[in-house]
Length: 180
Image (cartoon, rainbow, N blue to C red; front, side):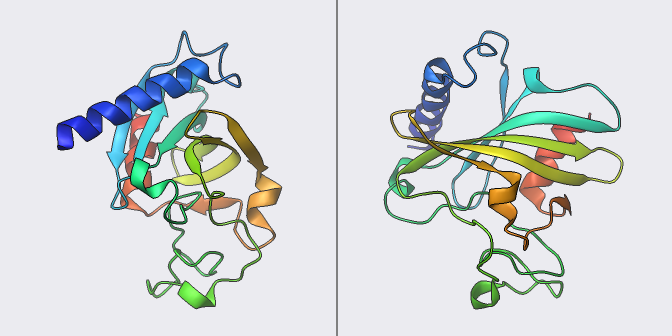
């Protein structure tokens, strides 16, 4: 069953990349590397071909593919949880590591629209400090049709810091792959 789910996910990523208009120029060069599947069964991929080799700051594209059963049944987070002083989204963690939950500010966009199936995320990271920034998120439905795009201004709403020191296990694995 797990092998079937993995095969289906890989096929969906391939189909997504094949039909994506936004990245059609780069699709011939893209080499997607599965980095981690997190606790919500969201598969995370890194486009190795997108890596900018400048140091210590690197720019890269990552993809998040939601499990089929989650597409219509639950709210899907736009990003990995933030650990820090603020509580921009309910799934984030406060400085004392407690879930933000109802303490979330509500001033930022936290969840992908209903029916979202995958995200393509343009990121930057400082490999020395592990500070990551999300620059842009393109959101697609299960038919690989772009639903919307969120810029950094749309995402932050003044509550989510643009540059975040990463401490989340899943996101650190992506940054490790980017910075090696």
